[in-house]
Length: 264
Image 1: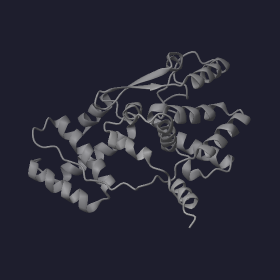
Image 2 (image 1 turned 180 degrees about the vertical axis):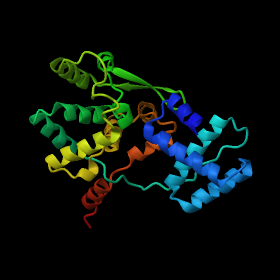
Image 3 (image 1 turned 135 degrees about the vertical axis):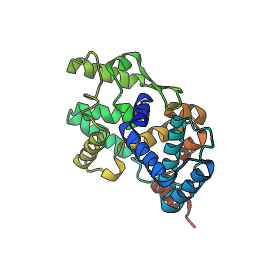
């Protein structure tokens, strides 16, 4: 498995993804031998019957990457269909975002202010947030190569770019990453820091987590620019179907719409 681990690292997979992919590959090797199309289908059946659909799909995706690594000439497994909820849950609202942003501004807590701003205004994943460098702020964008070797450009809006450059000047940042050393500032550390900031400003911590701001970015963008194909490109989605979830309302928004509409 050491060779597979090195292969994943060379493909620039996140540490958590590498860990889960290694687990899935080891599980596959333990459960079936040799690897054949039939044994792969039997393993998939075991995964689907033993785990939730999302977990099964994660394992299936990992197995397909492992098969690519092995150069296996047979089949690749298809994921199982996951029925999505017709609403979004635990997503930060614009009001909560403004309270968090304005509170951090009042307290001059600029580090977490810019963590929140970059998450909300660029739609990046937390692993991508840690890659922002001073040079990207100067350029106004960051280019990311996805797992499928597809180039994606993350734009830094002009107002955020101006703010961030001023912050860098005040902090004496002229090069390198924006948010500390990448190895020191983990994804978990960012998530915990956001929870603490939410509690500080009396905001429900359940809605303040890195991916919540990605939802906020997408929902706000699509409300101002209905080009869903463009949004899919901005977010790095392989399929527009993945992006469609952001057209849905949150459960609270659905509740409010029903209460306002039904007056009979």
